[in-house]
Length: 508
Image (cartoon, rainbow, N blue to C red; front, side):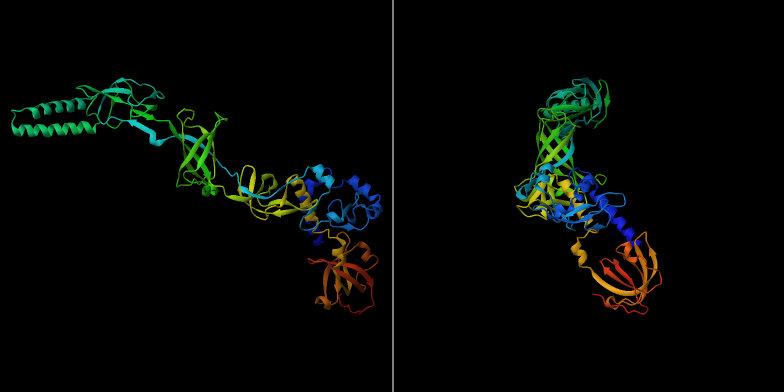
């Protein structure tokens, strides 16, 4: 009835937890093996040195056991459960020395040591913004001649880029020449000399703001030179082109140092600091690593990726790194702080469940929930759950964990006979209201049961076996004995006819 549905759900859960394990050869007895073991149960129980069989469980995982070998409804032999590997809710697993060697089980100790916890991120090479220079005339004119006429061309500091003609420049230069002559004329009127000096000062101020005062200026044109060594990123100059004040005719970048902008995840930001060393690797040169240093953490977070840009600066005098390249970044954590660690292969992490298999004795392993901290290349930090020196499984742990899950699931409904013996029993008087042979349950009209403080009522009971109610009819007075097996499960183990009006006995 209802309880049958509950057990069906439990069976499904157990099958899901242990299905992988059951499929592995040599981990649990196959059907044929179980048949061979059932053929000689006495030898398994009595022979010296043999493992003791506690009971036999259903081969399909159903919630029924047997003290003796038997077959299920499909003819499959029940599987023996031994004393040294009986299921329990802790999921502990016992593995024989022969099976340990077959599975290739390896262990390692939890130890306190510095963690090889490099922080990895991806990024891209970008131009050092502090090394970008625009060549922009501050006056109007025309380009007369180009000396560097292609984007991407390398230039040196002071190298001629282009020459220009500007009427404004010619006018200002003439004003300087006239004002100089008037100011130096010894016989000129004092008022005229003062006016000439003011005109000279104004003309020179204008040339200074145009950044053409001094050398390089003649009556007609001026030649512009490169302000830095680098490459031409952008060139808008064409011979004969008219330009306006402020127009960027050349953009030059010094690539001797470049930036790497790496995207660091939000949860790792506490591990990044300005001045921290890093290693950069690019696909073009996989065998080469470039040293870098963190220079800035941007104050914003990209909501879509939950990352923050981090700027690194590195030397590029050999010109191998080109803006736009994708790179892999490894940030090295400073300091030599020690942490409790285990090898990465020891951790079983499903996202919701993080455990290691701790060695609980010779051939025994127990799942141990742990709290994980930082993760390194070879080791993982353990914040809680283990102590220094604890042995953990680092190879074949997934197979052992699968068996552990199966054992923990079976323990929910395959309790040892000793646990069954501890169930409380009660006696009562009543009659059968309805019998459901399919679910092996019965609805009973029973009198009050003082031991349980139950009033007279009609309720459902499970039957220990179909034979308990054999030959009994609904409505006739009965005396019955039932067990309280916990979790609201009451099972009738004995029923017999009783004289009408018989009183219920107190439970014991």
